[in-house]
Length: 627
Image (cartoon, rainbow, N blue to C red; front, side):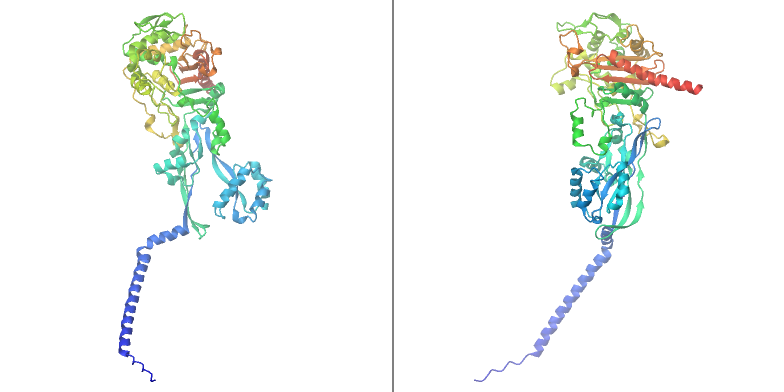
């Protein structure tokens, strides 16, 4: 069988096909080359800055540097809050051959707890091995010395120093200065809202209370930074640029630390508060709240056990009683009520009333409102009513004035309002009004509600600082200054804020009214029937004041108050507010002692001691200079 012949190949057709394929491939290559060139142009030219920045970010790191916190001084330049170096034991994992063995050996030199080891191992798992990890904080000087002598035995282990806040006067100033502590999530959120987070990248602590919190922006300073070159593992190779931080500014307060400590020594740990103001501008010379606590515990991180102990303490040491403690102001408010009554023409300086020891609502058969003196004071005028603290006289004044005028006038003295003190921890307390009672109790205001308000009881509450501020307004005859702790910033004497300027004054009161009320307060301390006369007996100078005894609970029909038969926490509060010297007042002192008893018997003697300390000490210094 004969084979078929193979067909003859069409070379021209194959050549044409190859040519077409070559052309397509050529144009395909051209297109891809163009695309590559365009892409290279985009990356190398148009995106140069972006990619260069990304490259630098991988190679160059900006490390923030924390500023030193500003210091705090008292009015005489004594250091109240400082920065001290503290030392920590740190381990660099990549430099340690056997970490478990190293930890075991370190325990023979340091009191490392199981908690320290667990914390270290936790950090070890999430930290790069060339970064140091803190093993133990707050090394003592002895521990630092021991380690220094044995450091050769522990390669990869070292002691590093940090700056931490320290309060040399401990619990004497806690409620004024506050404290700094570790920044938490709440602080971070607040810094974000204020657009300040970038300034705290390297900062570990932030002001939590008191002056430390109120002037945080002044004390903190401005963070610096350093640009460093790192390798692909993040290790620092070299420093390219260093911009030093700007330290925080120093604060000088109006406080006199010696006076503060003196008052604290008198109060010891009794529950209460004492405010001392400079009469001229209401600057705070002392602000004591007892009992207190050591703020240094919070700087380094207080333990749960210690914090729970403070929280559950029935004496509430965490509360600043000077600004957050709210108490019935009792008879300390009678001079302020008297100013309102005279100005509103409810009474005159010649008005007299008989006090039989009780007062009853007109045309009413309800139980009488009793005077503190069961048999009464007889016929008295307004000055005598202040001197002898006649309750019935002020019951009638309250009835005639009415709650609307009382509330309006007392708010002008600062009751029911923030005082303007430069710390955030403050209460408005309560100056009652009709609207307040409807909102609070869903009940209208009755005439009977007004009567106890006339002697600083009932729904009226106040803070010790409010009482001190109101007393300053009275002594300054209507001129209103907000109490303030700050004197100046740095050593240049520059005032921080203009908010310390006088507020709106009380200008519609006759001068004779101011003088008469102040005379009544002088008689409280030095008159024949003054309620505080025994405390100021044979005083070397004249003073003015008003004592008060605030009931914690209503006696009802019980006529005789026997403190020993009542639970301690239900006993009366002792109050006193006053000024000295009388002719040219220099200081205001206001005192509240919880469940201590009568104000004239308990609080007034303390005020006398403070007056003596300030005035006689100053007099002795002047004598020493002249000799």
